[in-house]
Length: 167
Ligand SMILES: C[S@@+](CC[C@H](N)C(=O)[O-])C[C@H]1O[C@@H](n2cnc3c(N)ncnc32)[C@H](O)[C@@H]1O
Image 1 (cartoon, helix red, strand yellow):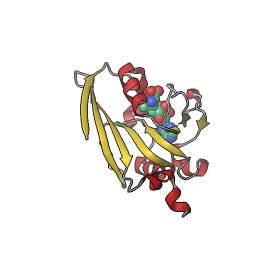
Image 2: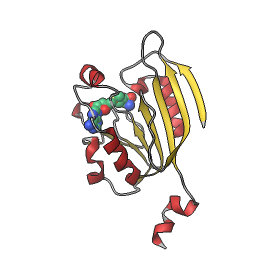
Image 3: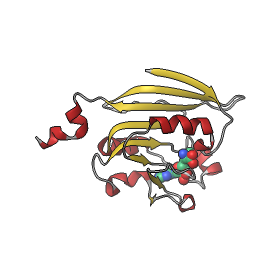
Image 4: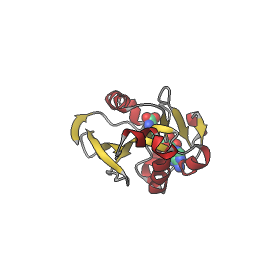
């Protein structure tokens, strides 16, 4: 697993930090679901948010993903939820996701290959392994942003492409 670090001035909207956007873009492969897209949409991805002010491609609560999308429809998902209730109230019009593990469990069914997480904690998604952790320091007393890449543990290429199920 790769561990890396750089400094960036903090921003309420993660991809307003150019180096974080650049790092994220390099991690993307295939069809991408951007679950908490905020104001910075990812070009070519399906960008979802609960806040109509963000003008997402799909306006929805992250808890509803399984009702909207089909199993294994995506190759990669980006998860950048509010990191605390304080942030949700101060920066995101009060919108928060209280059950991130329930969102994660839906993504295990929707995403074939990769989850890219942003937050103050390190996820441990069942059936996935850590590929890279990037720490973005912000100086002063700011919490660091922890960016984690997890890939599904595949036993074979057939498993990734879905051929295994059709046999
Ligand atoms: C950290 S910001 C995302 C920043 C984004 N990556 C960017 O750079 O612009 C978190 C976003 O999650 C959205 N959000 C909060 N609760 C949500 C929920 N339950 N379902 C979907 N989106 C939610 C907020 O509206 C906010 O835009």
